[in-house]
Image (tube, rainbow, N blue to C red; front, side, top):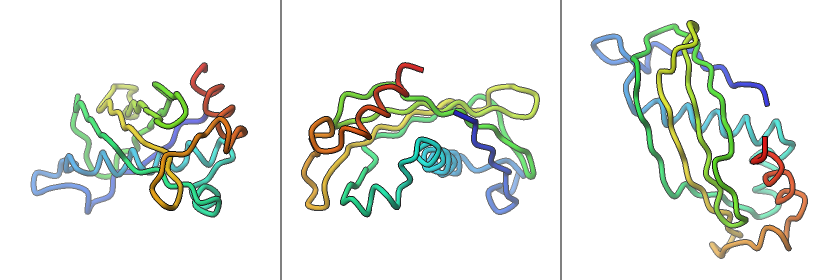
Amino acid sequence: MREYIHTVQYYETDKMQITHHSNYIRWMEEARVDFLDQMGWPFDKLEALGIVSPVLSVNCDYKLTTTFPEKISINVKIKEFKGVKLFLEYEMKNKDGKTVCIGTTGHAFLNSEGKPIRMKQDYPQLFDILTKAKEL
């Protein structure tokens, strides 16, 4: 998978001209959407099939500050996937290759009524793609 590149926007910075901590969570979402798109399962396809994927948990470990207009590369990988829950890990680096943030998110796969999906039985293609991607 190719990395996702985010350019720090001026509005994402605070009075000290440092990126506000809450934006890193938004960047994880941007990178997650791109990650699924690269696998051929964009969010609009998931939603059209009646699959929703709420966030269960988020964690950020901030290492270095970022500022406008830095370009931040975000690598996403599957940390754990067992069918109903998906855990992703994000490593964000600056142009010098220094890690600025490491994050994780946890997600569930539910149907439109909010019930857990039996991914292996109901969506075997997506199950196989996520299982194989975890092995990379």
